[in-house]
Length: 323
Ligand code: UDP
Ligand code: MG
Image (cartoon, rainbow, N blue to C red; front, side):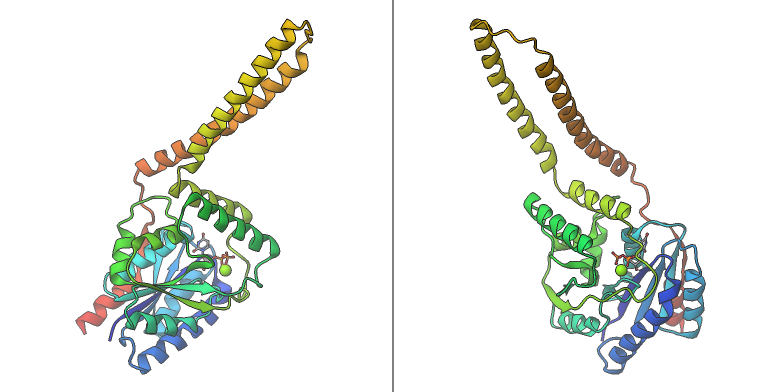
């Protein structure tokens, strides 16, 4: 029998926490009863610097329910940071870790299937959604474009899988050895390797509350994904540069021919157009380079990716070991 931990990042999730705890407790209890996982298996809520009652609820639940534990981050580190904190705490003494969103959009009933696949020898089991009906058309289309673009850049992603997955202890350890500050987990996990599997599920509506991923965060997330994994944009600039040089050679020849033939034009319009067009192109190129320089700047500082303020998971584990 192995110990399972279910890591749940939470940011201002007071409205869903009751229901999520109930559902996950049901799943974990059933798995314990059927002797698939160890009785000391845990749910690990990670409070990502919530401003509402989230932490108080986690603390309260962990007192009355032995399956529930939690980790409190010192401030908001973002979804990926929260996941990482949870995986770091849980993988120390769990044999497998499942990560799932707090809002019950991911189907908790897929967890037993993931566990079965793990028992059968898979080290990474992806939760793959077989519908996107519950997302808005805008989110659906942009997500599809993003996955296509990433594929085109040569980044291997598992389409339609988000951060709902199971990982073995060994896979978690490898994952944690990737030290990027701007961690794009769904791009890193396929790089971990090992035997993997997929479990399909239907993605539901958020149980309550609203998305903690406004457009602004989504764009940042997508850009992070692209620039963390690929230098194709830099190469594209070079191609663009050559292309423009080629065009200007043709223009040069054309102008000389015009001059020889005596058709001298006043030149103002072509001048203005080229100044503006080139200026624009240069700015775009510089901004792309800037994006990478910025990335180097933030990576080179090696700042902590999360800071734990309190760790009820470890507190509980140590206590259980003593007993
Ligand atoms: N989340 C987090 N920190 C943040 C933003 C979100 O821990 O800064 C959590 C959030 O509580 C949820 C998960 O990440 O459990 C996914 O967020 P959400 O459901 O709002 O995103 P969506 O499903 O709308 O993409
Ligand atoms: Mg959600």
